[in-house]
Length: 407
Image 1 (tube, rainbow, N blue to C red):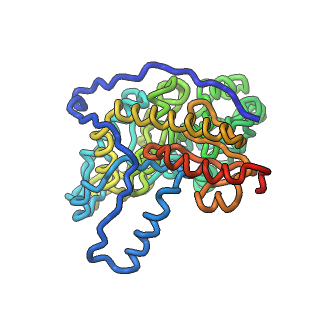
Image 2: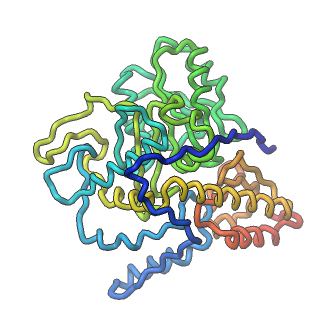
């Protein structure tokens, strides 16, 4: 069965800030192989590099963009960049890039329509972003219950455990979206308790999107007065903000906080991300004399190099560049579906998704192409930088085993 719900489209939000007017809008090029000179490297490291280079052409099962070349940033590797503490207060130690981090946060606060008084920082990845969002929620509502769908990222349950928050897993529909009726029923059992809801803006397996305004409506029906909603937009938060009605998940559309991963949509060569909340909580801030910067983050010491990379990607692309990458990736996903239909391979795709679900892929092909599989369904992800040639190569292998379907 193939879900067929269609997402609405809205005009692209213009980028008005004068500070960004000089940003270079370069068209993202083809997939980069990123081969590195091995001069002076130990044989063990050379072996690892060769393994990575050999695996790259068939790496289409995970959300990793490969169209941005970060090698020009190599000179920064001569410095330890530690953006310790709050991004708005420079530390005593000289080795930081908080000025670039502030630019990055401004860019995404604008994209996700954050109100005045917003707060955020560059994280180590989507998991820390979810943890920080839930930490803010618990600070506001210490006796709350967390509601998240069964398709939520594994980090959500882990964050609940770390924070000592009780949680309830909500059922999902066939396409991976949260079951709103089940949410209403589960939350309605304890209407006096505040509700913290994690909205999936692109689930890990099917790239399903939960609708934040509808989550609010169901909580209203359940009699929940106090609530906090965190949008987990790990992979597709940026492209969806540029091509879809933002009111379905952003900071003006009903979410209290939102987070995403930089190493997914932006393909940074180290894990990182961004979290932004409508309001920061002063209760979290602690003065630290040793560093000279208040402690308002989960991790304390944070990668300044990640901030440099995120700034570099935005400076290279801007919103227009990100939109072009989005449309090319969506076109590739549509192309992949046409090729799969041509050979008669069972598959489906959520509206405008970059993720394509494939049924009963032979184990040998799953292993060779590193395709994650759940319940007999594998997926490929048409992230920026993935090419038609790669899709054609996979389809060619599937075509061979299509007659008789000897799995």
